[in-house]
Length: 137
Image 1 (tube, rainbow, N blue to C red):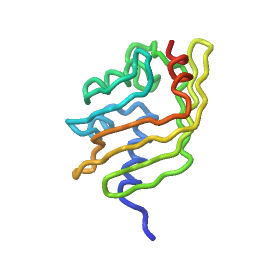
Image 2: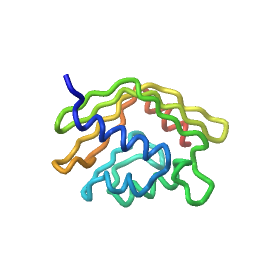
Image 3: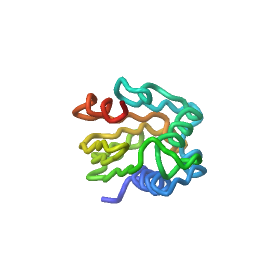
């Protein structure tokens, strides 16, 4: 059985994200993107494409233009991936640090893809959103 094309799209986005390649990420996000961040912290909520790119710049070290990102260490380890024509679902381990705090948890990331192969919607699902909130407190 051959690999679904959305798996290759995911790995392209993953590589661009880990390198802070904002141009590739911007290209891979649909213009009508909705990015859902769980929790009750200052970064939680639903964002459009421009807001999502601004969030990456503020939070993720690889994207930070200010040199002072909110997260000092941002790691996502992919443990599994399943793709269909409309969905990419990954099982991940998030391992982040900031200001002496750690967030180390397994979860699921869901990406809804549009007909052009762009990410149209994103969700992060985790066992303990309270720990995520505490990490960003």
